[in-house]
Image (tube, rainbow, N blue to C red; front, side, top):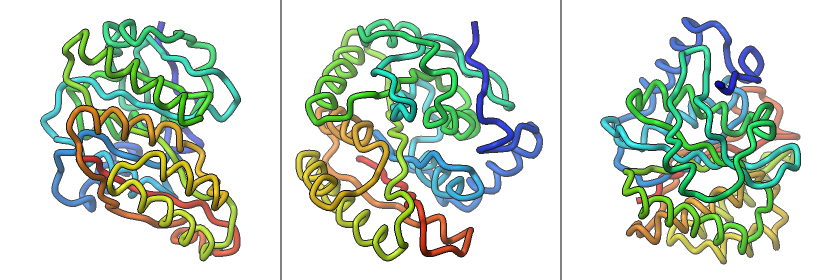
Length: 261
């Protein structure tokens, strides 16, 4: 069985040549590849956030041939679960690291993954930048701090028990459908807490400011794992909003590329 794309032709082109050309252009503008342990990458339509996603994925080592754990929020209310299937996109099929997925010891539920876009939209970028990498997709339901800590524990256990080389992509957009000035103020206030990988403070700022980021749990899980593996800080590589493309500053979505090192 293979997980088939569900948002090709909507969030990104379903024509392989057009998709490859679009992503290649994004990466050409993303600068020099980095050496991050984990990144935050947006998951909106490529027209709006594709250039930011490329900047995030480009922060991962280009010669990386291990496993990319992709953690994304469930937009349909499903519980935290993994996928053990290969994932197909118009660019081909990516192998699943089933050994690591099994070692996570969390439920595997392919049905819950079938329509979730937060994970899918990351895969073509991974295929392009890291063609030798496998993936381990994880969808996060409960996004409390305790849930993030628990998922981080499971990921760390899986990494240590399999000894697989891993990098992590946390899939998240930031503020949703607020004026651009509000999005910029709230999002950057929350992101500042990640500079020192202070996930408790990040959660506090998200809560106190009412930041409508959809993947704060995946972000914190990624930061907790990377911190335990030796990362010391996070760098904001790029921040923008949907207004950059739409011109509408009254109701925007915020997008950030963040690298953890």
